[in-house]
Length: 500
Image 1 (tube, helix red, strand yellow):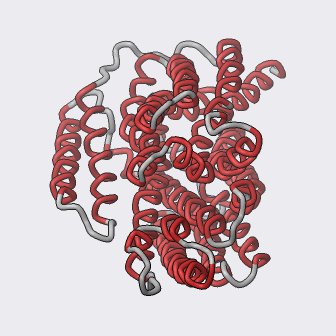
Image 2 (cartoon, one colour):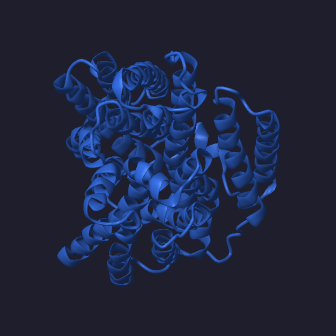
């Protein structure tokens, strides 16, 4: 019995390491991007795709990979994903051009998409006891925030001593150890070769999700591209064809009936809203404090790590007390607390560093609680045979939340800056494109100082607008999950009818 328990918790450590790598690579370029742009000579469009190729491709593949895991076995999917992820990390580290790096990032996403649903599915099939499983999933969920927050810190530390490729090369030794440990610890079996896996459905999901993200990015620009409407129509057609096909398949990639369970749906929404907030706050805060305040990449990374620091204790505590407290206070209450923290960041980002850090800690505390319990709500309300499907839905919500944050909030930041900056007379119009461009054009003397001051003021206005949107989204999430979980207060059961 003791040996079996030890193997379960060791396996949790292994799959959590895999999740940590996946989430780390989502944010590791936030602080490294200025160095990458300079050394590879990437354009602004290329720099956006260097970041976005990874989450876009991953979000598009996640639904298919989780259901494929139900067919071939989650252990096999996790091992395959690890190998692909390690090979892609080497390719990314040695990329000679921006185009090569974008391709390597897309290849990384293939490995991550194979791994990510398998991590949660392996927990679901390994931990039979509900209380143990809640704690295990809480640990797993907290690492989604920790990995995101550690990305800028890890890249800042590595860039102090090594070249930019080291931010990818660091993945390789972790992959090697994880492969060896998985071969020893992960349970075999669980595969259902008789289950049909539909490649067409997976491709339609990819078209719908990638098209939607691309349309959002184009629409959010200061001057929207005329192709945005066409791409949106393609995304809508892909989504309609995907949904229609699922209703006809005996083994659908996504069974929409699982969303009828309000606890399951609340978990999906909480995961998406939480990652939207985490990614949005990290992206704009690391940029603001590097460009406006002159922070180093490491110092900016340490600042946003306050979110993870706040999240860790509440994530573990939420999972450990879920069976007594219930979903409603932890999920809706956590999102409400994170809303308060985000408003504190909005009010004090340019006036008080202690209050800013306090706001980030409070936001992290709320998000940590909501995310850890969201995972339990999702996995506890589906049968074991749907573990891969449910984990895929959760991962899509995580990735889609962060992806929409980068696409929408990154574009909003640029659009508000460009629309509000008041350039001094005689300043080239290129300074209106971004704060980076304005700083590069600013010379010495009074004229240069005036340009820097004007650009920094406009960027702070844009930063405030983005943080206000994050707070608004969290408030909407609080209300939505509160309504869905109104019957899941203290003493209520975690599982509903869909889990049987």
